[in-house]
Length: 572
Image (tube, rainbow, N blue to C red; front, side):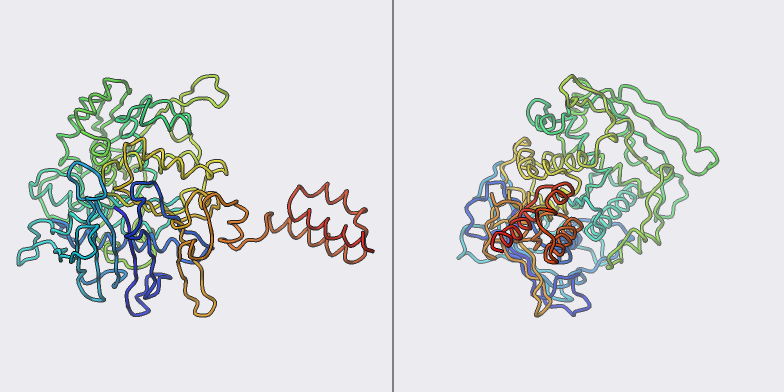
């Protein structure tokens, strides 16, 4: 998919979406663009507090609402009003591939979704490339019986992205809210389906938040299904990852917490027993304990432990169980979402109804005893930096930066041939300068490795890194600035502000975009100012130069100080 336009509509001020005021507009791609098949993520940049992350948050919130409007079924405890969205009024335009076995520009469908305050969204579509052709209205609300029971998905569901993946290196809680709601919906729907005797299916909801657990699922799926010599070669080139050696899966057979009254005791995994039996057949070895957790007789019924020594036979077994990398990930996603089994109904309702800016206080994190599923002993073969060979390392031993890079690379690799929107909030936070300077290239190589041609993906990321801006063309960098007169934030492409970004020095971009003139830290700048005051007070430069050189490294600021006062002495 490709984003075209986002505009926040007219709503009462108290319903304003964070700093995005009524009328706030971002133009992403233009219908006149010719580079649809090229890798060009959008980079949102600006000083803190200008609303960059709010754009990711509002996109996630809008697509969550559209998913809820159009999906074929809901859990019984989730109350939804199509007229009630946050933001409550918006215009969203994008292109999406109509899949016919081939990805090409002629397959784009132009989608326009409009919502007025307190009204149901309206979706209209037309074939892309003919601006004279009229838009056709598409039903976005799923058909339902008189009692509200849905009988299938709305036609508009096929014009929504297959996947909206969210990631934040800084744990952006507001961005995660619609994704957390999606996880609860998936779990409650899993529970309802089981009690109603409906066959197990993968989650219908398209929102996936890539936190630590989901990241492990992404990486493992890629390592099991992709070729180490081709599609995974960039993992070795950038991180020295040669292969996966082994991993363990722990599945706690807890009693299912259910909204449905039943006299029958069921376990949380009873709905997927067939899949677990097939996983046992793939495992190198497995065992199951039948003792409850010590001191907590009600906590666990048993624990299933599956160990996998990964070789060609293991990969073949998983290939027989799952058709693709993504299908494998989807099942791991289900297992992770079972970890919500301990969440009480009153907490769920608080989260479902939340329109605030936090959920952590409402939705507690599970401890290891409460978890239904987690990976253990995730062992990786990694090249030593001195080139002397390889070493076995637990995935947990990798640095924060390495984990962060794996998040982004794995997501790109997994989503090949799917209409997807990736929302990445400051993905470079834990990177050293070298990785920041090549992050955009690594993302592109990840997509290429997956065999993608860029027509089905759009990536929107926020960043404070001038290195990342210097890798993006000016029409794909959107700079946020607050107007001093009306205190509103305006987002325009760098080329509209008069800046060239791609290939521009990071020092220039730091000054132009982030409004930071100094190339050194503020404390060091203070020392330079103190030397300047001493020189103005009459001290001789030649007496101070040894001290200045001893205490301060090379910088533009130091050279300017010396140049300024050497000129004065020359003309004295």
